[in-house]
Length: 148
Image (cartoon, rainbow, N blue to C red; front, side, top):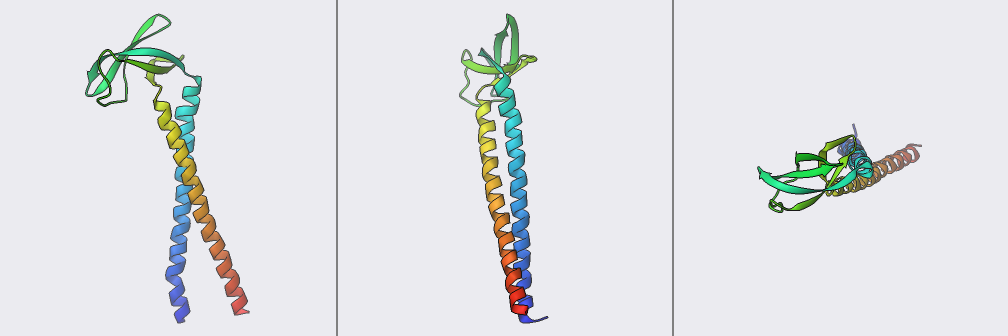
C-alpha cells in the first residue's frame, strides 16, 4: 500500500460519513414534513372552531369546558404553563367526528414550524449528499486520468 493510498482511506471514510449524515437529514426532514402535514394541515384544515373556558388547572394544564351544537364537553389540554388562568377564554379546534378531542388552535403553529424545519433538513441533507456525490465523481475522474 502506498503513502497516498494510506492518506486516502480516512478521506473516504469521512466522505462516507457525510453521505450517511446527508441521507439521515433527508429522512428526518421527510418525517417532519409528513408529520406536520398530517397533524396540522389535514386536521386543522378540516376542523371546526369554538370557544372554551378554562374551568380549572390540573398539573399546570388547563381543563376547558366548551359547547358543540349545544352539547357540553370538558377536555384537559396538552398545553401547559403559567399563561393559563381559570376563567380565561381559549380558541379550540375539534373534529366533527370527535368533538370531545378538542385542541388549542395554536397547536397548528407547532406543526407548521415542524414542517418548515423538515423542509430545511431536506435541503441541507440533499446539498450535503450531492456535494459528496460530486466529490466522489471528481475524485474518480482524476484517478482515471492520472492512472491512464
